[in-house]
Image (tube, rainbow, N blue to C red; front, side, top):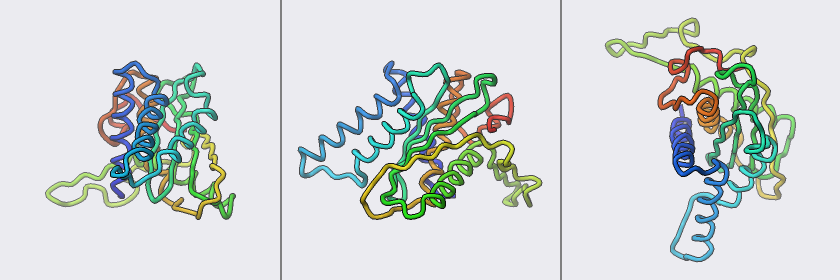
Length: 220
């Protein structure tokens, strides 16, 4: 799997943990870091970044507004990541009756001009769902160099009845289209992990998440 899947989970979980230690809202903490990066770009000609902080700020603010993050009694987890030239922020929301179950995912995307809105939405939803499934279940083990799993009856994947509501939002843009097949997948794991921490108090440091929880019914 692309390395961004694992990097996003590690990075975004770590940022939430730092924010918690500093007694800061996870959104505000990220925005402070991004605004600092933008100020460096504006004032230091030697400073370089491979992404645009203002676009990341835009998706974080948009998804936080959509989910009423910080102003809701619901347990939520934020994750934001740049990959394949696109900016994605996601918020996972815990079911109000089950502390280890995700009820909804909000997702805001800046991928330039959206040519085909229906196809783009479907593609983005698929990435979120696949990302959640990978984080929760995907596990390939080896014995003497030989995979223990030979097919899908042994390799657990997310199933349609387990999929929560996925709310996709696109930032209006006049920029050329960028990637969309992959960017919504990496942030999903971090959003789920951070939401689960809010509801259970547990920090998840390894994948698959199901092995860290009392139930494997986190999704759907």
